[in-house]
Length: 265
Image (cartoon, rainbow, N blue to C red; front, side, top):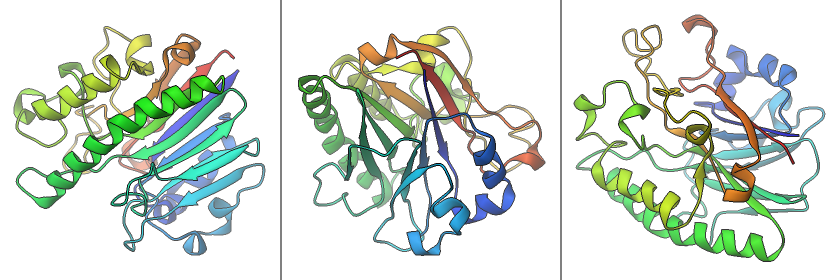
């Protein structure tokens, strides 16, 4: 069995002080994909920089205090690659992948965007470059006898069931028609599978992000924007998937919750 967890930590140094270290010590995951680490490796406390029992790879952004992705694996990876061959985005701390036996696992932090700003333009450019790469990655992995799993904060709610207040967010970044259509292309053209949705086809959510404003968490007024996206062969081996939602608002160490899936390999 392979257990994989993805989590946007909303700043790993801050999360480490709020309970992430204790959560890490107790997780049964074999692979952990982190996003929005927001720190250079040297700035991280040792407990999360090089935790005992893990092989850690950190890919910080060139821009200080922004983005940043990490991969933790129980087994030492056969190979690690930062970025996906993009002159604009390979130094932005948004993608890292590792080869493990039979599977390539990646941690992705897709730009969040903001309608009417350069941030949204950046998001569209990233999406434009990343979709072809997903196709190439799938083909390359298949030629090597591997499956692919891309985990992370995709910053897009694909369907109405993926956010509580979808009617009020039809013109918001993260639920724009063009963003949702792009994610459909990931599933239809590139032939990847949304693992959580495949296992929970009729469920509202399960949401993985709640705003810190108001009582969004207490009211479960959230968004499902954190995904495990797999090639069909691996997705077919997923036996269960869930969101590790904190019991109370006070116990959260991020505005996101970890998304975990178990694969029967």
